[in-house]
Image 1: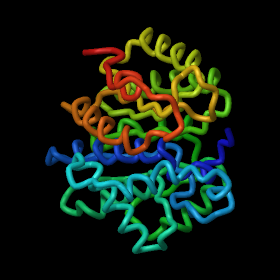
Image 2: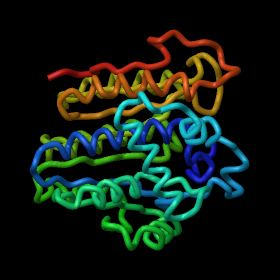
Image 3: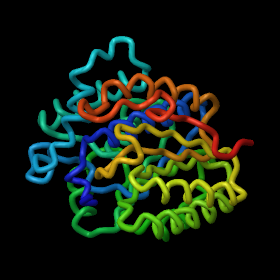
Length: 291
């Protein structure tokens, strides 16, 4: 699996991740209090689905292209909002663009000018940071050339006292990356236990994922929710079997909204030639650690 995100922009994992992000932002915005949002791995902000990388994998066909062709009239609100956001991005830029997480944060800030939402994005890689800064510099989001491990510790707790930290790292060495990310989450949680943390992770090495869950359970972090959507069974060796999101301190009833979202998305994003998955293995939203 090539971890340069341009190869995977708009795939099924992006669709799930960004719709869950929309849901988190909307629920955080329900309280009439300011909040802070940080994308700790911003990437380049906008991706072209006509690029050589995107055309080489064709992954967007099973992701954003599938959802844009689907009937979403009866979809959960976050999915409808996602579809409208894609349409707006394509109207603003071009019809082959796919917006990354920093764009979705800035889009939320633009849509809710009455709310006091402060958005920021970090990107450590110089070339990606330059692209991110160039493409989103006019949008209401702060862009910083900064490493997540150093940067998060420096900005929390935010002055708003409420907020969301989104982590979407590349996972070049899963076992090592999972361990380092748990350390980062524990350190951040200890410094800002009221914050909401959303960590995207790939489901392709089930042993690594299960070990990740076991280590998370051993921490003192409470309210750990896991959201999974699989398009291939775990015993089939493919580039990416499924997509996961760990949310620490999710808003009230977010778990119910996530179940509705994943249940709606699963038949749209499933792979035609993949073996049928049981409902429980196709989508799963569960508390890894409760209150």
